[in-house]
Image 1: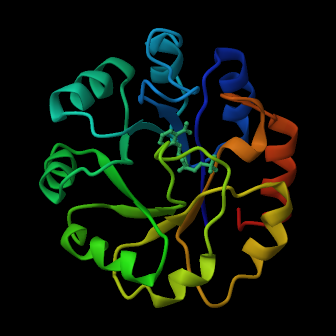
Image 2 (image 1 turned 180 degrees about the vertical axis):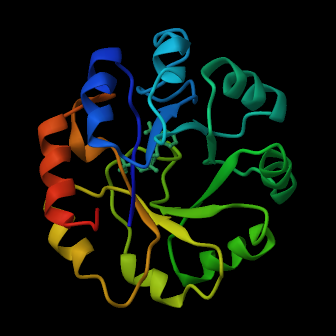
Length: 209
Ligand SMILES: O=C(O)c1ccccc1N[C@@H]1O[C@H](COP(=O)(O)O)[C@@H](O)[C@H]1O
């Protein structure tokens, strides 16, 4: 199972997280988020993050030009789209060599139909809780909804995953996420992660080395 830690904001905190080698590390480029990084986090702090950690920019309804400007500045490997971005934008970013994650906010099983036009245009889907903030609320949705997922695109489970969820995630049998995305439930304040809690959580998942 892939691990993505999202909403990193501080250089010292990033330096402590990197040795845990999450598969993806996320940075928020949505101005209304308390985790917004541009102007606060020097681009070199992100571009210097060691491989193979995938540096991921999270955007909400940004234009392709805005996304590419940030991707270039911060040397991003992956782009996560949390708004109403089109399949064409996803495909264009994928064609440019970025790993593309498209978020869908699930209220009920019917919301799953929205994924169909994005099949093939994304590397991963990411299923999250609906909210006017577009993400980062710490609220869970009903993971059982994903039992109805019939797509072929691998997906990340997201939305309010917390330290107490390791056992449940380890024993999932009816849904098969390719990865999980953790964020606000591992924070001391927005953007500042509790590294000890993340380390314990990863250990409890007992992932193959
Ligand atoms: O974290 C944010 O502030 C944020 C803002 C706007 C869009 C997405 C955001 N984060 C993403 O939200 C999900 C769920 O986070 P949480 O666990 O519920 O806090 C996660 O994918 C983050 O990447």
